[in-house]
Image 1 (tube, rainbow, N blue to C red):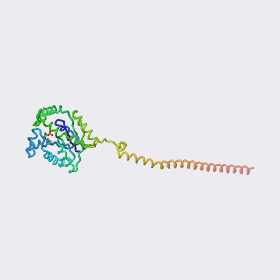
Image 2: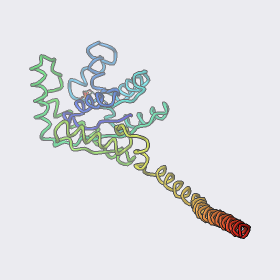
Image 3: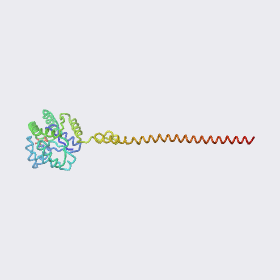
Image 4: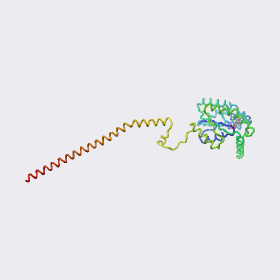
Length: 284
Ligand code: AMP
């Protein structure tokens, strides 16, 4: 399964991506994470991205497209992935379409997490406080000033993707203001509806599962059962006739036998009587 999570900073894309990773066993590909790693490692990409990221701007399209293209080619991405923070511009989305086509891969869905913008600042403040509590390093771009800039670039450069994917019938919008687990459930339901994930298979016997078959296969099965029933009708009729015939025949045979026995008995009786008469006459 290959999906994109779309939403402004603080909409919960990262959290949901991690939960989806646990649930479906696919990779989370976060361009933000990859760029932060490149910055920390001091690679050429990192050096290029460092200042842009710290100010809340967007790293050039060709840089992020290159990172994603290489990452998708790794063997661990074979089962699928969740793109978190990519694409962020229409040219990035076009480049992604192109590279997926080249690699013969299909995009299953684009999930937009829609949130109330006024709640975003609160969310990011909470995230920062929690990271500090855990003793984690806080992102340099998680400040109210930089967040305002990141939000502005989301609105102008990323929001057009909603139209882009909606036109291509790939977009599903989910209320990102719900509780975390409710959002996860809504995403799962959406993925099920799109056929991107398999429903949990229950331990049902084949015989029990068969009547539940729906769709083309189910219709076909129903039709062939009807045809079989129809085909069996003459055989049933013939069998009934045979039973009736056999009953009749056995009755006839029984009657005949009775008659025969009775006839024999009569003959025997008559012979006995005649013998008696002959004996009496001889005595006289
Ligand atoms: P994120 O962790 O997704 O919020 O990304 C952090 C920062 O990395 C962004 O503010 C951008 O500067 C940069 N970045 C991440 N993904 C992209 C992308 N797809 N295109 C351009 N810049 C990106």
